[in-house]
Length: 154
Length: 106
Image 1 (cartoon, helix red, strand yellow):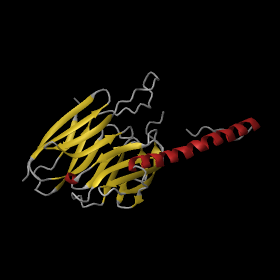
Image 2 (cartoon, helix red, strand yellow; image 1 turned 180 degrees about the vertical axis):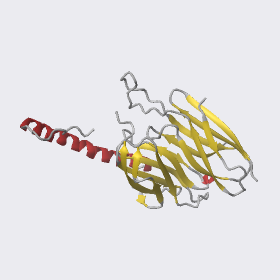
Image 3 (tube, one colour; image 1 turned 120 degrees about the horizontal axis):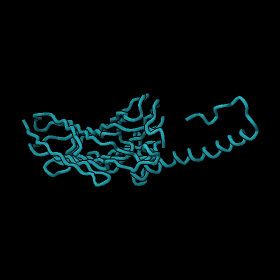
């Protein structure tokens, strides 16, 4: 994967300009990816900016195999008819698709907790957002380092 | 029929919050991977999962490509009475499977 600059001993002027051009081309794409994550989160919340807190995103900080990563999302809530968690969504930063899972809850759920296993294409940040019955949004994020990526060949 | 695993406590008490664990055998092909012939394989994933208790929704989830193969989901339910739990997975290429389990309150 990192063989783009594999032979740095002899750098010709052409390869140097080519390299700079490549960096210049890659940079805005990365910025656009971050923008995309924010856009997707705002799409879930309907434009509201989620506040940090109440949500616990539990994921190993160092992952050996990106093909199955256990993740648990829990939200503090009494889960009563008047005050419960309506939904939990998990988003990623650098997989080909920003969505991971969107779950819907109700007072019947008893507890706002979800555990699953996900794929991670590379080291990145994950964001969990919870929607409360009063219309507020809360979030938590976690940084994950992935040693062996899922779906290496895109 | 895909193989499924559904784990429920045997005799929960009324008012107890139980954990339900489900797993279904499914490759969750992302649509980004090349197949043996070098051509990118078509997406084939489970897109949604629902859990109904006596035909009332307990839990629902939309799954995407970032869910690992053989999707595992663990969630909770407040036990109020005995009844039937119905788990439905549906996805690409007309995939749909429903499993039912009886829940008996102690």
